[in-house]
Amino acid sequence: MSEFLRLSLHEDFTYAKGIAYSRGVQWPAFWISMAYVVVIFSLKALMANRKPLELRLPLQLWNLWLAVFSIGGSLVTSAALYNEVSKYGLVASYTKCQDFFEGYSGLWTWWFCLSKIAELGDTIFLVLRKRPLMFLHWYHHVATLNYGMWSYNERTAFNTWIVWLNFSVHAIMYSYYFLAACKIRCPAAVAQCITVLQITQFAITHVILFHVGGIKALGGEVDASWPVYWYCLIMELSYLALFGNFFYHSYIKNGGKKFNREKQPAKKEE
Image (tube, rainbow, N blue to C red; front, side, top):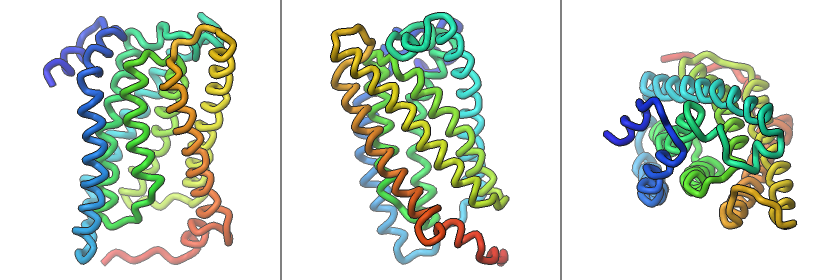
C-alpha cells in the first residue's frame, strides 16, 4: 500500500514505474478473480433462504465513488487521447505506446487497471441484495480484470482507446446506478442508451483490433504482443455477443422486459 501511495502521489509518474508495481500484482489479481467466483456463488447459496439486504447507503456511496472516479478518468484520458491523435496521428494513437501512458494520464491509466480489482465489489452488492446473477456480469468482471493487468504489463498500445472508452461509458453508467440507488427512477430508455454505448465501445474496439491485426500480419510495427491481441479480440467478441443478447431480451423481444417493467406501478415504500 505504501508503494501504491508513493506512486500515486509522486509528481513524475512513468509507465516503467507503473509496470514495476503492477507486475507484482498481476498474479495475486488473477487468484483474487478466481476466489471472487467462488465467493459470489457461495454467497448466493448462503442467501437462498434469507431476506435480501437493502444496503442502500453503502450502495449509494459505492456507486458514487465509482462515478466520480470514472468521470475524472474520462476527462483526463479524453484530453490525453486528443493530444495523442493531434501530435502523432490516429493510427499511431493505437499502435505506439507514447505520451498517453506517461505523466498524469499514465497515472490514471494505471489506476484504471488496478480499479478492476475494486470493481469486483459490484457483484457482492448484487448477491447480498438477491438480484439476478447473470453470466454476463461475473464473466465480464473476471475477463476485464485479467486483461487489464496483463495487457498493461505488456505495453499494449491500443489500450489508449480501451481505457478512454471504458472510463467514459462507466462515467455515465455508475452515475445512473447512483441515481437508482438513491431511488431516483430514470426512464428505461436511459438504461437502453447505456447498453447501446457499451455495445458501441466494443464495436469501436473491434475496428481498431482488426486494423492492428492487419498491420501486424503484414509485418508492421505495433506495440502489442500476439497473445494479448488474441485474448483481447476473443474477449471483445464475447462481450459483443453477450451484450447484444442482453439488449435483445431487455429492449426488443416482446416489447422489452425493461420497458414492460416500467409500465408497472412503482412499489410503495413500507
